[in-house]
Length: 96
Image (tube, rainbow, N blue to C red; front, side, top):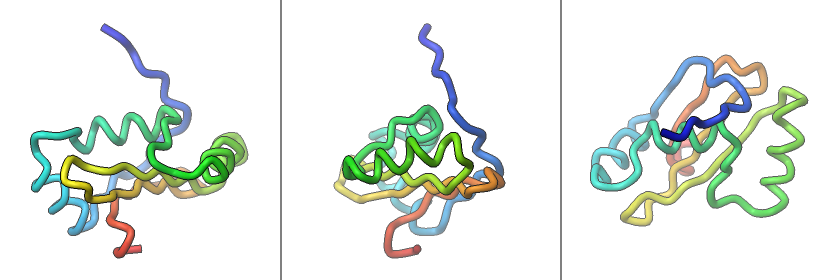
């Protein structure tokens, strides 16, 4: 069994209504906890190289971190961890 090294704390976990509905529609694909683990371990998903570099900078400097993932039906979901690491929110981009 492989263990995953988490790079920062999640804080309180929050799902917006849009993210919750998207995960429900895509129950056969990667679930919320799988994508949350990717986010917390530094797999930023479908972000640009510049955004990935910004995330790397942000991890050790306690700045906000954003990852983006596409679900099986193509729906994009963001994971945002606040700078103070008090919360990580899964949301659809249009809910931002």
